[in-house]
Image 1 (cartoon, rainbow, N blue to C red):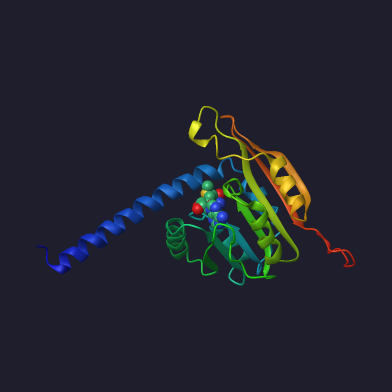
Image 2 (image 1 turned 60 degrees about the vertical axis):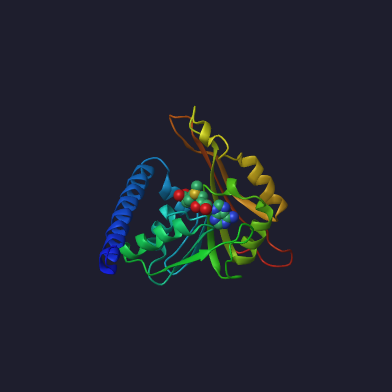
Length: 222
Ligand SMILES: C[S@@+](CC[C@H](N)C(=O)[O-])C[C@H]1O[C@@H](n2cnc3c(N)ncnc32)[C@H](O)[C@@H]1O
């Protein structure tokens, strides 16, 4: 039997090896995505300013969250929401290594991102809308979380890479999302059905929306 110190050592070395490998792979995927995802344009659509509070709903291991942390700066907040602990753990580690102290990790429920009410300037839902089982319920929670004038940016795929059968179900037409936004009392500010078109056949759309104004209140400028 191994002495306890030896066992602890093996677990520590194994953990460090796993972390190093995982982080290297994530960084490589992120760098490649920087080349085609039009990330600056997607982030600009959120109309953020230093000090803002932004939610990244379905954050995964943090491709967008880490960039958002730089945009809102030390006086701002990034609420990074995911259902699963593993991507949240990876994001926690990446934020620690990046020295980002403005990220808050939130474990969401399938129908509720558990965001604070009336406290969020913008919400990003990237490559995640197609996974929502009841998007109308989630949009209701997003509307309650947004401050007056706050924005929602949806970014998702309408066509998978050609010949990739595994990705065929991970798509949603922009018209479906637009119809659901209307049914959930959101007003669409802009819609780009061809936001990204890749040589491999992959197509992405981007929609910017905000909760529809209640009648009787002045419309804030956007
Ligand atoms: C394909 S990943 C996209 C991650 C990230 N937004 C990006 O662009 O790299 C989708 C993520 O959304 C999460 N997700 C799916 N449904 C969700 C929900 N209802 N609430 C919160 N997270 C959800 C999944 O666990 C997964 O990590």
